[in-house]
Image (cartoon, rainbow, N blue to C red; front, side, top):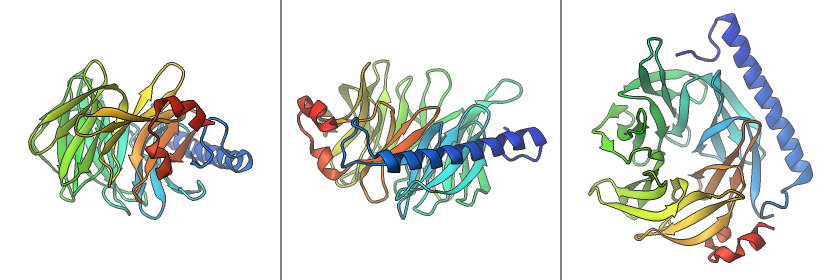
Length: 318
């Protein structure tokens, strides 16, 4: 697997151009954001912070920072962003087959999932550990391409691996990086996250052919399925809700699913580019809005999460 910043002249030049171009794009977007403010598509009380182009996934860090994995099929990098002003505090290249990112703690290290194909055409996967300074310090092989990482809860992250439609969640125990017993998921499951709701741990994901939200209690194995079609579910400490991105032809909203029945209790207006949801280090809802050319991080005020009437979405977005 090829890394950015290899000593070969070609890849090194491509990586340098990618990092430089992305940094310039972030600076331009930050300037535009400061000048124009939030557009009418967003509630004015929200805060938007510019990010790198081609953003794929994010990992919130302590002291109002976030690590963003970004790039394309040729090269990928990690950008440490200051959530106060969008400043790029650090950037470095990572394995080009990287698929997602998580943080072991508020100051790292970072975990990067990797999924790709070997030179002989066989699917391969791994989880890599990187310091915030950009040094890869450990690699743990996976039985199949690693497609996504959950957040770390009580020193455990779940790695979703799979080929075709088959999906399995592998517990990764930290800091030892020991892999535990696999857990079968729905065929075609996407974007799992690990949540602590009350005193119990739950795996939440978009599952099945219908793409509805699924919650599985880790210890008992009890599964609750929602009828709500949505993606990228997550939760926020102190709230007994699951948040997920609901997509329609014209718009995207954030569905708030109440436990234990997973009924849709609220809808929150969201950017049409909403890609993934996270819990920030200070326990607020954070959205990554991304396209191939730009991205931003959107922080939702707590009062907006209390929106109860789906009919008020249009008014709330103005």
